[in-house]
Length: 255
Image (tube, rainbow, N blue to C red; front, side, top):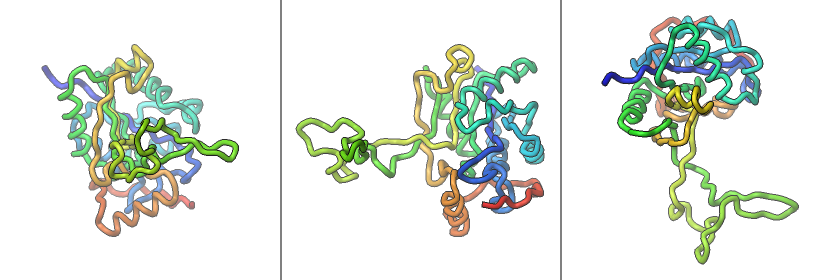
């Protein structure tokens, strides 16, 4: 049986509060968006690579680097609080009306620039190897364990998680002795389109983990993240996908 048809969906709305215009901010010579488009194309698993944006300028940049922008995202689906299901459902329905249907989709966010084409291929192989899963989501081991987190109210604290009875409380337990806990990162998701059309859900009910390696899941959201990314590149600790196209002339965006 042939592999399911899969489309890459890259969200790149123009608004950003923590880091102005972060999706097109220039990193190592190219706008951030370029590296996710490049990784998606290099993975060679997608029938199409689609950028979802509310900005004509972002659309021009996306096309320069080889992605498609068949239509713009409506402004009411591009707010700070707009849930992913809204723009994903809109995009898949619009594509279907254009005669372009897919079995699966992958969300690839531009804020994870160190994700490579091979990262995406590895995730796709793992997804296809599993039966009866609705979706795959990238995760990494927590650096801040929820067993040591607290809720604060009225000058008092209570543990975020229920504590094990008749045992040392988690907040007093060495990190190494705590149960392993993983947190999702923004690098990638893969799911069946039936989740969206039948259940109006991205993840569905049965999720499988995809364990990112090294800095594959590093996510840039604020100025400190940006400085860390630049330092990782300077030190050779992280590598960006190799962009073969000439740089798009994006003016530097002030902090």
